[in-house]
Length: 117
Length: 110
Image 1 (cartoon, each protein chain N blue to C red):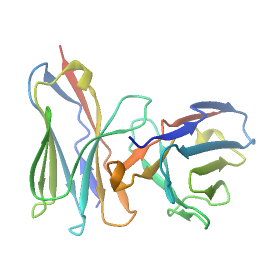
Image 2: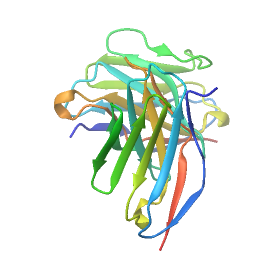
Image 3: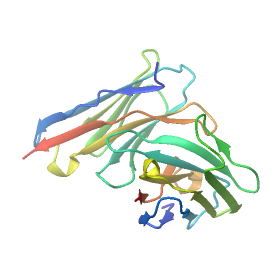
Image 4: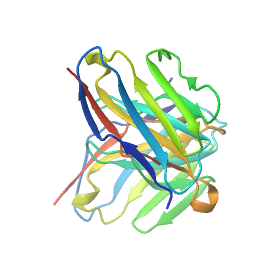
């Protein structure tokens, strides 16, 4: 089946530093990827839609200068949390639409647990 | 009004019973509907997708869709302790607009 590989799975960083999270589609091309954030006991909240070769589309309330998204190839999207603060600590998950030939629907990366200290 | 609403639970059922999870959505134009299971600290995994009115069965899982009532449900027959998780309802309005409910926590008691 279609797999999205997400790294790192866990990261602890100091306040004020930047963290990069990568998502790769392993056996299909993903022209669009989605980045979600999930706080404890809450649902997934869409942060932005990443489009290969063009600018990402951010949801209302998400700071595009703080959460930098790059989708430079058909298989790789990255999310960089810049100048991270403790309130950015969360579970970040990427997702991609699966081609119908591989089952359709959406598949998720394994998630990244970010802790900012 | 939220795009997708679910009862947060927790829902507890004894092992072997039927667990019934419900979800309502606000946009009548919604086209496709999904149920995901999420274990604590893990990312969601797809259980079922449903696109047309009626029932869709896959093993112990049955998804039910009623577009007139804007209602989608998931039934889990012969519930097992390993089914204990949070179940997320997701709705796609077409294109890439994809909305999740807050999830229902299910506990299956041995």
